[in-house]
Image (cartoon, one colour):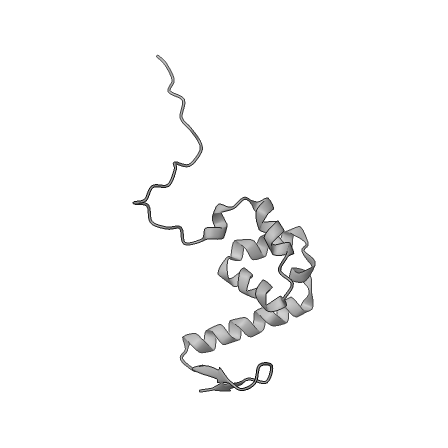
Length: 105
């Protein structure tokens, strides 16, 4: 009997395949870290973490300073509150000067 060698690599995408839901998930972890190292705003760090929890965990476990800072936790908390209010239909939009916006319900 002859064994058939099977490839362990994923098959190539075709035009008929559905697009991936997590584009960043297809990149290698080393590239993820390079991308996350360039994120310098705490709210962007929180947005990355919510959009792709795997990236947030990778950043935390790798010790990236922005993701370990207490201001990251504040940004994450605010983003989660805003997300919940939006899902509940409480927040419709913000208005006012940038930096001095107020929530309009």
